[in-house]
Structures are given as structure tokens and as C-alpha cells.
Amino acid sequence: MANTFINRHGYLLIQLLVLLGLLLLLCQPLAWDIELPIQFWVKQGLVFVMWVSLFYLNTLMLVPRLLFKNRLGAFTASVLGAVVFIMLAGFVIDTWLNLPELMHRAFNPDEAAQPHRKGMHINPVMLLATLLVLGISTSIKTVQKWQKDTEIRQSLERQKISSELSFLKAQINPHFFFNTLHSIYALTMINIETSREALHTLSRMMRYVLYETQSGTTLLSKEIEFMQDYINLMKLRLTEKVTVTFEPPMPLRDVPVAPMLFLPYVENAFKHGVSALLPSNIHIAIQQHGQVLELDVRNTVLPEKRTVLEESSGIGLANTSRRLDLLYPGQYTLAVTEKTPENEYRVNLKLNLS
Image (cartoon, rainbow, N blue to C red; front, top):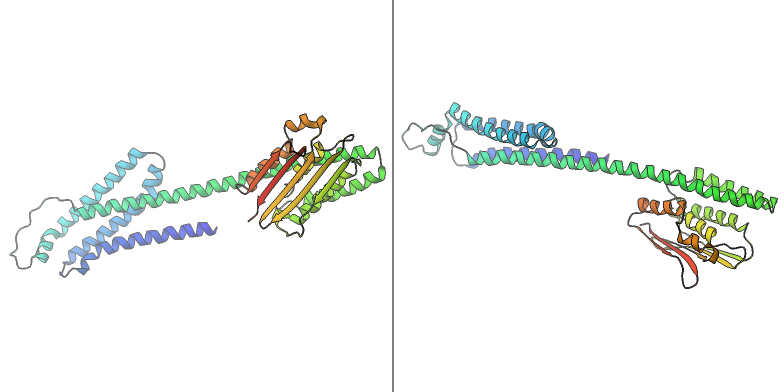
């Protein structure tokens, strides 16, 4: 709204400056040390009216209806016709007011009156000013249309991004809850009391997703609490062979972040880094370095799950990468190492929140 206000009043100011420039051009003879006939000023006034009319005729009709419609031939013919009309009108006015003879007398008062030779001649100043009026009005309207088209494109892009983010988020949430409910279902076969605790944790997480993430951003502290709930939920079904460590930033400085942006990487670690037979580790760390927020997720590469790691990372990771592109374009770095020297699958994400 503010940008539209500035554009509207900015173009109005430009138009006023153009008209003022034309008026100053026509009033320049006031500085001459010559007494000019009243007919001269009548012509100047009529020329000013013609230039103003041409300015708005070109701005409001010729450019939008011909040039912007790709009717270049009609636009060129109209512009040339307008120039010819202005020049002919100037000649008619000169003849009607007998201006050539009156101007000759004004510049040569001591000479005897002589009949002025009639004939049409081109006034180069008037021709140049007419072309200048057409050029400036065309440029103003073209720039105005370009800015309007840019605003429309940006608005459509924002709507597209908003719709796409909603779609991606809608895909991520069911994907996450499907996996979590599957884990709780497996837990009910082992420990009913523990499964009840897991359902309570899951209900708290669902409230977060339903009510805390609708604005498009959430506080980092709430996102970390959500991740902690998820980790605790996953740990309920793990054996002593799996070691899980979670390191939140200390101290934590609350900043707005996109909700559920880190979860797919954590979920992926639990999906591919857990073994019931072999020792495995999952390490999750979030750090803050000034305006940079860093997520580091590492999990043990297991032989029986290596094929899965080499395939697609799943809906969650694919959508999260797309969300990063939309929400933080040029503000993030994502490094994925499929196998480190420590035999770990590592994801390192850095967000510049400045």
C-alpha cells in the first residue's frame, strides 16, 4: 500500500515537473530585452495547451492502447501524425496572428515595414520540444507499466509461495504423524503404560502443530520443545543399544523460525540410524552463532539400511529442501554427508536469520 502511494504521487510529481519545464521553455522570452507583441504570448499559451494535450493523449491513449498492445505500426503512425499536426497548427497560428511580421518588427523597430514573405517553415525548437513531450510521456507510461507488472508478478509469486508452503506443510505433517502412530502401535504390544505416556506426548505435539504453527513462524524455544517431545517419544521404543544425545543451544536466544523445519532431518536419523542388534548413535545439536542458527544431525550408518540411505530421503526431506528454497532463499547452506570417517550419516544446516 505504501509503495503504491509513493509510486502514484511520485509520477504525479514527475508530470508536474515536465509541465513546469514546458512552461519555463515557453516563458523564456521574458528574459529577452525586447518588447514582444501580445500575439506572441497568445501563441505560447496555445502551444502549451497543445503540448499538455499531446502529453496526456499519448500517456492515456496512444501508449496503452497501441504500444502496449503490440500495434507498433499504428503507434508510430499516430506519433508522426501528432508531430505533423502540432507543426501545422503552429504554422496556422502564426499565419492567423500575423506573427512573423510582428516579430520582425519587434526585433527590428528601426527598419521600414516590409511585407513578410509567406511560406511554411519548420521551427526546430518547437519540433524538438514536441518530440521531447512524446518521449517523456512514453517513458513515464512504460516505466509505470513495468512497475505495475512487477508488483503483480511479486504478488502472484507471494501467493504461489504461500500456497506451495501450505501444501508442503500439509504433506510433512501427515507423514510425520503416520510414522509416529506406527511407533506407538508397536509400543502397545510391549508396554501399555508407556504407550499411554507416548499418546499424551503425541497429543501435546499435535496441539503445537495445529495451534502454534499457523502464522508461518514460531519461536525457536517452542520448536526445540517440540523436537524434545519427538525425541522422547522415539526413545520410548529404543533398546539400550541406541544412544541418543540432544544438545539445545545454551543459552538460547529466541528468534522466529519456520515451524517443523528441522523435524524431517531428526526423523530421518531415527528412521535410518536405529538398530535392534548393533550399537548405534544419534546426535542432534542446535547452536546459535550470532544471527546464524545451525542444526547438526548425525546417525550411525548401518549395513542393513545402507540401501535405504542411498535412495530417496522421502517426502519429509524432499519437502523440507523445497521449503528452505522458498523461505530462506540464499540464506542457508545444507551439507549432507552420506558417510563420514566416523561411519555416520550427517546433515548440517545453517540458517542466516539476519
